[in-house]
Amino acid sequence: MGQYRMERLNAQLREEISKIILHGDVKDPRVSTFLSINRVEVTSDLGYAKVFVSSFLSDSQLEKGVDGLNSAAGFIQSSIAKKMRLRQFPKFTFVVDSGMKSGFRMVQKLNALEEESKALENEKAANSSSGADEE
Image (cartoon, rainbow, N blue to C red):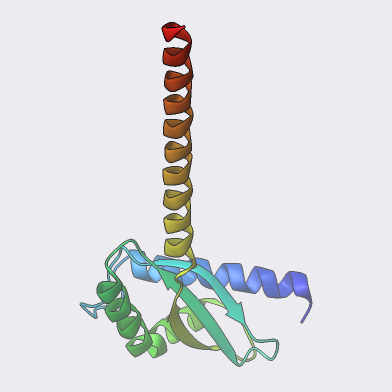
């Protein structure tokens, strides 16, 4: 399958899985509508698809949500397979995507460093101006 077609398939699967979660079609109480599907990676033989899930919920709630999605994987697969025409439909495996949270933490650290740097610059400016006043 061509690269462009694989990217389209990944995007379409991501969209369909997101719709199922958002509409509350999965009755498992562990699956929250606050779960977000970041990306889907389908193998070239269409046998398997790794679905990356993230959320701003706590890590334990995210893990429970991913477990719930893995339990409901068959239902989700069959629901989407009815809408899409594929010779072989991939088997879903849901995994936690920690990239979003780690990226958020990195931005927070960078912002803290920037504020610290500005505070040091202001302190140096205040010290140099007070030193000039004394002369």
